[in-house]
Image (cartoon, rainbow, N blue to C red; front, side, top):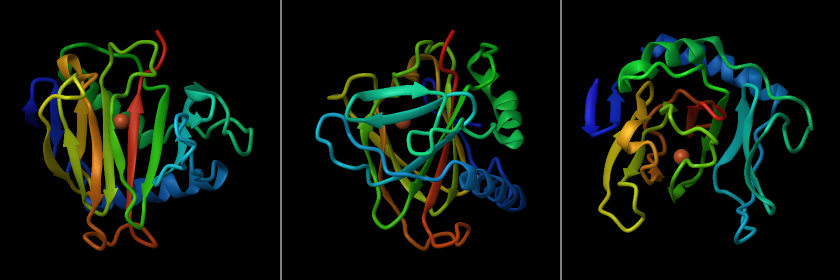
Length: 206
Ligand code: FE
């Protein structure tokens, strides 16, 4: 485990290639039940460049009404698929690293970055309870991840997230601004059709 900055913890290659492939297969099967879709930014009405879906009891969605968690897929109106067991186990193994014992994650937000998709600098702050860390798993092409402090105007740094890497924001960094500058197309052949999947685990409500 590498401490990037206080509260920002990085586990390089936490998932070996065989585990990445097994997790990918599980994720792709669940995405057939909850198809990836393109959310809309509440302010501008512009579509995200990444495609999203969710697993677990609550999913994070964005549309003209705002950002929120809800128990159903906004397009199919069906409940989100269950959390993949490998991700529940990963949370169990790593979420205590900030010195607390948080409850299981209610949400796994899935982001697929293809063809120049990116994610602007933002905070994960739609959770009613931010006492637990946010833990993200990367699969597929490497990404340039940007991370700052809890003020939008503060300094930032970038680091590469590769397939199998796990990064977590907790404690003093739980509300750190972060985003994806770009994805290095073709850097990893894991995802059919290319690109990067991020799987972000979050505790949502007290
Ligand atoms: Fe985020």
